[in-house]
Length: 582
Ligand code: ADP
Ligand code: TZD
Ligand code: MG
Image (cartoon, rainbow, N blue to C red; front, side):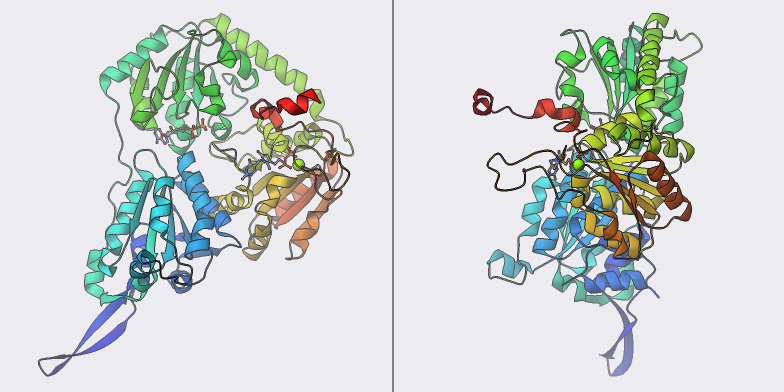
């Protein structure tokens, strides 16, 4: 029985009657389960403690975290990997706010998730009477997510969950907030009526077919190109149209560039990958097909030096969100629809008479790729102590090559930028990183979700600063015995460990305790800690962790002077005119 089973004695016309009841708690759980949502990431407390307990008792997987932001990041990544909204469950006000950062980040990244927070009663909140953890959560969430709903009556829970699911996954995916006031959970109603009030969402993310004339326009642009280029974004990875995308690239013979999380959609060592010739590809291409990638800061807004001569590009953009078109530059051929349908429509017009792009373009890119790969290769070997980013990542590159099924989580500045360019990905949706905001703190939440949702071993490559934002979740990793191997790239700080305070009073603003031993942290919880000072030690420890699936944290000692300010995006730092003068 999926209801409380509570029996209410009723006096109906003098005769004894009984009625089976359900309540808000059970209706929320039943509504999620009905929609095949079986995992909750969260932190317990008033008023949702029993919701977690009951969900677990009803067979749902309920993972309790140490901080809501990490639970929220886990939910977002669960959404990205499964195309079903990940659920984050929090208490009111402070718990809600902790989860809200993750909700906003999910929305920014177009990942579907639902933040469910307990809240205070409207009567008290609206009169600002000072309830325990009182806050007008709905109003605060609204501008930071795709949709926000509050439920006041148990009989509306089914509809509310259905709307939340649809809002999260249909069209451009994103975050949804569901506000559940404490009293809702205890509201009872007739169990049969309750069951009838639940909604199984039919076709939550309907296909969106592109208009035929838009397809023709896009094909005409592609045909007219001398130097075509395809850019794959994480929207393309999310869409799970892997075979069609691969067919599009291979049938057209057009070189492609993967954005960070689209790496592996086609293997990074594919002959048409222009990944190692990124600058040349962006500068010289004349027609660029964007597939689930926005022309935001990560692509220099589609203009400027990186893109070569002004006016030298024509863009074709495939996106499910019509308003994305012309966001930064003119889009010559907008193709609005879901990636799978759009790519299939393009493929349908690519017949045997298709002319592959001119060989001088593809050949020049290939030469550049091979040259750059050859230039990089010697830097990646050598058993240096301490390690630098190249030698440490050379070891990890090899491991991911040998274990293509492994999930890779990556955050930091140098640790991120070097790992992104050095570690090749071989399968779709294996790389999870800081995303559109370049946010620090996604690491452990993402690693936990990756392990839970895929069952594959996870390698989390973390800057020492980045790791600190979610480091306490190593306890969570140990508690659930997840196959996560965290490698902390310990260069004594943010970007480098060499900063000093010119006044001599305090440590420099970007440095941490020198020679820290992050590996000791996981030992406190029964996990396996390793201090690695050479690539060989690192390699051995990671392989062992991946084989044993035992929670492991490796403190990788990196030369504190090896990094650069802000990694690859130092140019975004404003310069102090006054500092320059002195
Ligand atoms: P990246 O950071 O990898 O460049 P972005 O996050 O900027 O990628 O872009 C992802 C884009 O993909 C968004 O504009 C989003 O609307 C779009 N998108 C997400 N899912 C789909 C889908 N199923 N079909 C089409 N477009 C999608
Ligand atoms: N806070 C948040 C939430 N996101 C951020 N991106 C930052 C602060 C600023 N920031 C970066 O952009 S990278 C970074 C910070 C604090 C840490 C870099 O240090 P690291 O990596 O140790 O993680 P490297 O390898 O030392 O460069
Ligand atoms: Mg660092």
